[in-house]
Each structure stands twice: as structure tokens, then as C-alpha cells.
Length: 101
Image 1 (cartoon, rainbow, N blue to C red):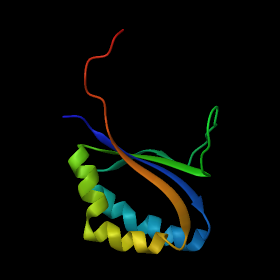
Image 2: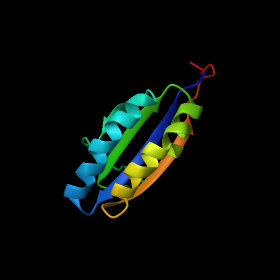
Image 3: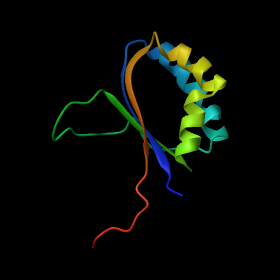
Image 4: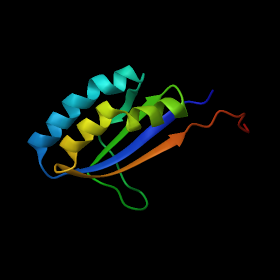
């Protein structure tokens, strides 16, 4: 089964409020076996546009990634984030097929 990922790009407008959101989501992500692969580290933009913070969260399956986002717990935490940041969040299924060398 292919893993899945939340790819999140964020511009924080209220850092204090955003920290409340971040604190609220850590336990929620764990319950759905989500783990951070990248979290607001250094980045470059060789093409296109981005936001100031970029995060990738890995989940064991596409369904787990969807279930986490749709969960009542995450939706409650999301309400903390709405006034504190502009985001783009994409849930994408990982590629699990053979690759050409």
C-alpha cells in the first residue's frame, strides 16, 4: 500500500495563534500515524511560487491522510489556524510502482 502525504505551504500572519494550532495538531497527527518529513526548514524556489513555511507530513496510507484531515479533532484545531495563516494543503498518494533505472 502506498503512503500518502500532506504537502503544506504556509504564510503565518499571527505567530502566537499559529503556535496554538501547531501544538494542537501534534497529537492528532500521531493518532493517524502521521510524521513530519519536512517542517519549515530551509528551502529554495528554483521555479514557481511558494509560501514562507513548507511542511510535508507522511501517513501510512491515503485513507489515513484523508481521515486525519476530516477528523473532528483536526477540524477543531484548524479553526485555531484559520485566523492565523494562509495555507495551501494538498493530500497526495505516494508512488508505489516500479521505477525505471
